[in-house]
Amino acid sequence: MRRSVAGIALALAVPFGISATDLAAPAVASFNPAGFDFWVDSSMGPIKNRIFRAADGNTNRVVYALDGLRARNDLSGWEVDTDISRVLPQWNINVVMPVGGMSSFYSDWIAPSNTNGQQRTYAWESFLTENLRWALRDRLGFNPNGNGVFGLSMGGSAALALAAYHPDQFRYAGSYSGYLNISAPGMKEGLRLALLDAGGYNIDAMWGPPWDPRWLRNDPFMFAPLLRANGTRMWIATGNGQNGPRDVIHKPIDVYHLGNAMALETIALANTRAFQLRLDSLGPTNVHFDYTPVGVHTWNYWADQVYKMLPDLSANLG
Image 1 (spheres, rainbow, N blue to C red):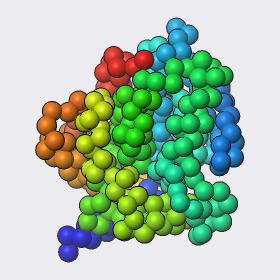
Image 2 (image 1 turned 135 degrees about the vertical axis):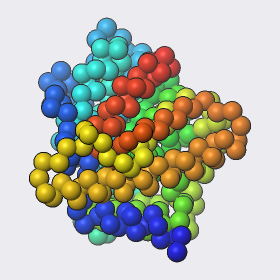
Image 3 (image 1 turned 90 degrees about the horizontal axis):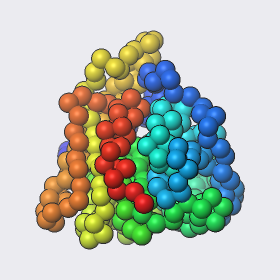
């Protein structure tokens, strides 16, 4: 019975979609004309990125912001659903927002998905740590070392993986509502359904069948010792699955979306608690955990975490 809990919760979230953008977003957030498109070639073809320059013009302080499962192909959710592209540059931080990568977990897949006509194999880890990293250095002069990376949900798990396996590039990693115990009972089954719902992707094309060692490589619970050994500064946050006054319901269907956001955050909370126990078992680790008294799987709470994390992030960049 225990094996199916996470899978059932994720499956229940699928029919109405698991995008957090269906609930109220900050009124001030929108396309930010201060940013510019930065195209970089890759094995996946040309990839668009949005760049927001630090207010003081420095090129040493750089952070990457990773999107969630339903990442769009035109703009990052961080730009259109939050105001971080306006706030972080005022802290003299250069912000890099990769665009696209729906359901990718920002990882290198083993094959194109055979369920949605995908033509090219996802290679997001290689793109972020090779193609984009060196293009930012060579064309914009950005520091390729000591960067930060943070993300929500799918992007939170990916941020920790990037820091674990590329510590020279990423010394700081933030995860908000991340799935940090992917090998937990029911998680693989639930993620299979979620990827099918978000773009029709076959999860077997990502890390192979459930027994493939790539699953363990990409599970934060399993690679936690690397983060400790690297001395990675981490900010790990999640809500408790309970909605609050900010979760405004605009129309009847939003009740379903709110229910999905509550269920997904409850899973993220369980995953994060397990990840914390794993880190605690390893000894002292350079990590801050933030559990909010309310919070569901929506942009309001993720933006809050960026602003709460910002002084710590700023102190650890460059």
